[in-house]
Length: 201
Image (cartoon, rainbow, N blue to C red):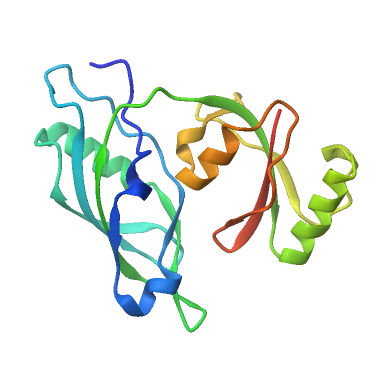
């Protein structure tokens, strides 16, 4: 087995399509899990992936149709089981969540995991996140914030360990996280139906 896991960092850069009427409210990837390592016998430098996902109103993946995969049935099956655990913000029509098909066509390449210890502040409104961000920029620490927002340490995949592989986040968030120094925090980021501020610990 290769020691470098396949991470879906290329997913968001790939072609996606959805019915045009849902364009402005298409599902957005919120949380992904790294795909399994490829067997040593797989010699190609990249894995093509073409999927149709049926995403429910709660953002969960109900069905997956593999239109094109690696050609290794055991890897494809394991990858689909992991992708089924991903979470999306649901598509919306007239501001109501709807179930819909979401199409992904991309090429995956191996990537070395990047681990960080993170805290996150999750807010439900723009006013809440703006107030919280203003407190942070004025010098307050996490423990000193007066906010209705949820503040927590991001839990890693290993129980009791708070470090997380930043490849679990969509590309736009990952690009922000890798630039954070210890104790720095991000600007507010829209994240599904919430807003989130990350701090690297």
